Image 1 (cartoon, rainbow, N blue to C red):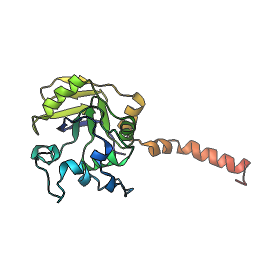
Image 2 (image 1 turned 45 degrees about the vertical axis):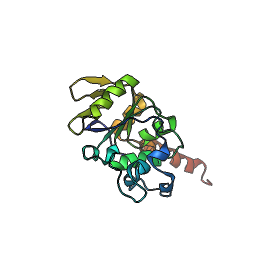
Image 3 (image 1 turned 120 degrees about the vertical axis):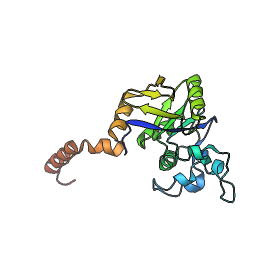
Image 4 (image 1 turned 180 degrees about the vertical axis):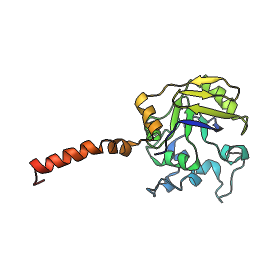
Length: 201
């Protein structure tokens, strides 16, 4: 998993509440178990018409936001079904952080397991960052995970809270498999000992 330390990038405003995982990545794209290639289907019904042409008014189709790395969204982002494809699609598009007043629990947990930083902030603070994001590509945000701060285009900083274990996992680039592999010497020692005392297993 890619480490998350400091990110400076364009923030795209998505002032919608209750954006569910089917909006993020529709069900017809859930056949794959690959984590790559889903970015083109991110927000499919919001981004594209039935004939495949782009909807010019959708934020990620506008030139200023085509390479956005941060998403500023409304309450209850990621609600609905528990599909892990949702953070896969965001990450494959290039989104490394999502800022919102609240997240659905399963989506929130899945973000950390896939190298995306979900930041929960009060609604009034999110509204300020939404206004920053509306200024386009020149209004970039800087997220520093170590100091737990977001620096706005005018230089003001916003502090956010995060579980310290999850924070360290992102800083180290460790998902569940990576965490397990850190214990590989202890696991190997246990397995070797078990073979000696229980060779029939």
